[in-house]
Image (cartoon, rainbow, N blue to C red; front, side):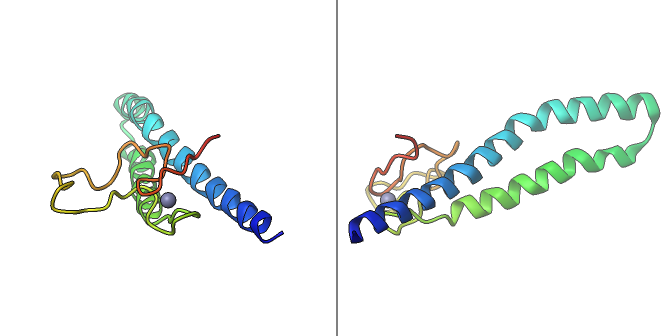
Length: 113
Ligand SMILES: [Zn+2]
């Protein structure tokens, strides 16, 4: 019974991470097309206020990345997307898995089964 409860809590935590990760990836892939369409619109109409759309997307992506970075693995409790930094594993710019990986960077728990 207790194990079942822990498992359902784990799958809830994974579902939350999946949702945020999917949203983040959608924004990344949508950013360039949105920016292209907006720039074409600005070129035709001269209305620079439309630039707010890609800027908002960018801001939203930054906020989502911040949220993703602080998501914790429901099994081991460590940060899901951050690798553990040791003197042996350190590489500049490698601490945050980008694009966000499909498994926990500590215990290997998979997002999708
Ligand atoms: Zn983990």
